[in-house]
Image 1: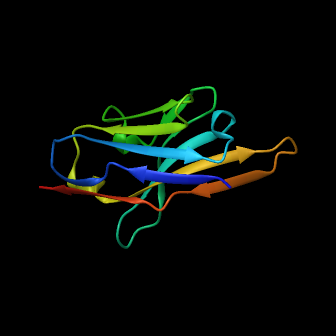
Image 2: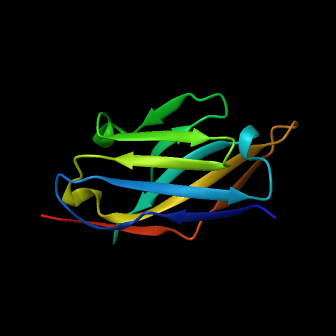
Image 3: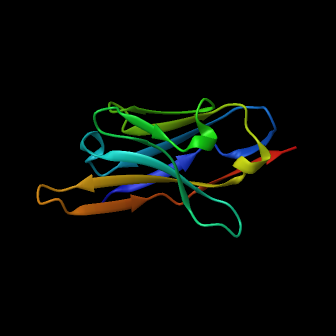
Length: 120
C-alpha cells in the first residue's frame, strides 16, 4: 500500500521561506515521478512542480525562480523548498506520486495535504 505524508506547512509572512516534505512508503518511490499540487479556496487544483524519476524538473511560471523541488531516493522523500513566498501562494499543498506501469497504465497516489498560509 503506497502512502504519502506531507509535512512542513504553516503560517509565514510574505517574503519568507517554507520547506515542504513528503515521505512515502510502500515502495515504488525511486521509479515514480513526483509532483506537488496546490489548491486555493475556490480554485482548481494546479500542478506546481514536478520531478521525474530521472531528476528532471518542471515548474509553473508563477513559482519559477522561487520554488525548488528535489527528491531523496534513499529516504523515499520529495521536498519543495519555497522562497520569497507571496500571499497568492496560500493553498493546501498536495504531494502526488505517479507510477507508470510497463503497459503505460498510470496510477496516482495522493497525500492528505498540508496548509500553507502566507500573510501580507
